[in-house]
Length: 115
Length: 116
Image (cartoon, helix red, strand yellow):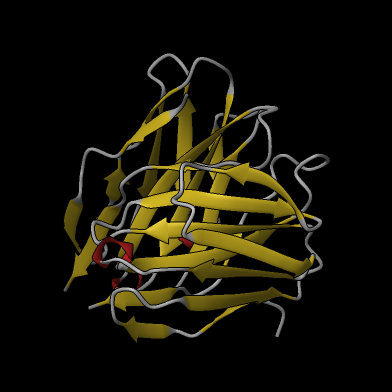
């Protein structure tokens, strides 16, 4: 069984500052990794995904994440945040070749960007 | 607009009632899901249907029954509602997992269910 840990429930940051949202996972098999963003009163949207190949993946809105197999991490970063980035961010994992398309989500990190 | 749409957006009801949430997607996807997001924002899959066939059924009370009349619709019926059922329920869809395992999920905007 997989699990995802997002240690930071809230991350406050000033506008134009860099940010890193941490994600660690646990799985006995190879995995695919995802970051989703949820704006208030909306559903989740895919930010980026790691499937294979380059460990640094770039997503929408200037976000990127790096897959580190040895540390079982997939941290999300943005060099300069904007007020509009204020949202809940979810890391998710699924087994490669697993049945269905069953994602296991972390508990989310609330990113609050302040002026 | 192409999207996953679910109705109603808000649902307030009393304990013991039966209610349904409807979901439709016009993205041409073969697979649809129901997720439950609790008050702490934890998201957990409940069901998944592929071409009207149930493929994922997590440990969910029998009071919850999904129904998929066609591959573009997946409705969720809940019998004998309990206080603990209060949550935001999200419908989602993706391409058939058998051929595209990395297909991302497309979520609806959620239905906030409040049981009083």
